[in-house]
Structures are given as structure tokens and as C-alpha cells.
Image 1 (cartoon, rainbow, N blue to C red):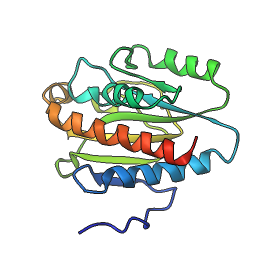
Image 2 (tube, helix red, strand yellow):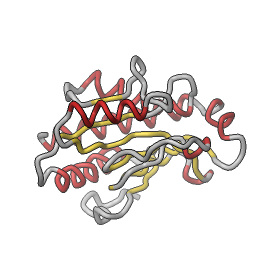
Image 3 (cartoon, rainbow, N blue to C red):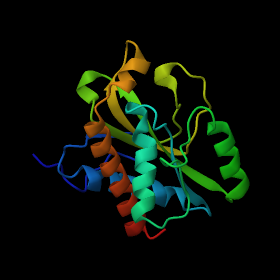
Image 4 (cartoon, rainbow, N blue to C red):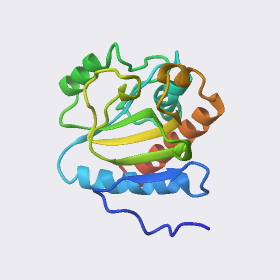
Amino acid sequence: MLKNLFSFPKLNSELKLNINQPTAMYDIASHLRSIMQEATTTDVSLVILCIGTDRSTGDSLGPLTGTKLRSFNPYPHIYGTLDEPIHASNLKDSICTIQENITNPYIIAVDACLGRLENVGCVSLGKGSLKPGAAVHKDLPSVGDAYITGIVNVSGFMEHLVLQSTRLNLVMKMSDTIAHAISYGLRTYGK
């Protein structure tokens, strides 16, 4: 059964949907446009910050998304790609660089996360920051004014190993969906 394309959660709530839903990309793009419209009522610069490393299959969602997004979207403020990943070692410096070089940045953070079995393959997005590295018990700064997270595997036991053994096929599908949704949202929003 297809979801009504015009019934979305309120902006202060989180949208969570499975990437296998036929309208997933459009639903993400539409909710993202709503967030961007609210964000750009003031003079802000949108920044897409894709977090993760290419050294772990599960944690590569961010850099894969950033690489794909950069390949088909000329939008200048995309950080975190396979060539230049943003991860635990350089996250703080990257946030400082963005704040120093971009006037009034509105950061949309993209990252992988672990969750419950029934939510694997789901993407969540909403307003607010995310806490990178929480699944693997790293103490990193919260980042973002809005977020997009992809639940790539199950949490609860040996998280580092779980991220290493995550199926690349799922991560690739999720990064395709997220990158196309962001690109479509940016194009149709006109920012």
C-alpha cells in the first residue's frame, strides 16, 4: 500500500521509512524540503556533512552518500566523501572549518547508525543534531541542525564487529536513496 504523498509528519517530528518503499526517495526529499524551507527563512547557507569512514562497511554510508551526491550535484557545500572522509579523527576540525569558512551554516548531517532488527534498512530524518560514534561508544561532538541517519545493522553486541560485517549491498542502496533524495530536494527547492 502506497503512502499518501502529501501526509508528512510535522517538522518537529522524525520521519522514519524503509528504503525499499517505492516512494522512499520522494518522501525523504519532500520532508527535507520542508526542513530546508523552515531553515532558510533566515539567511543561512545549507551544508551537507556526510560522516563516516571507508574502512568499515557499515560506517561507509556517509562517505558513499557524499561521493554520490557530489558526482551528480554541483552544490558546493558537501563535506565528507570517499576521497576526503569526515570521521572521529577529524570531525572537530571539520566542524571548525565549516564554521570559519561558511557564513551562517545550516548543517544537515548524514551518518550510519545501528538499531533494532526490524529497523535495519530504514532511514530517519528530522530537525536537531546527531551524535556520531554513539553506537561504538565514542565521545564525539553532536553535529547538525538537521540529520539523516541510515540504520545499517543491529546494535547491542560487539558493535565494531557488527559494523565491519554489514552488507555492502544495503549500504549502497541506502546511500543511493539518500543521495538522490538530497539532490532532488536541493533541485526542487531551488537553493
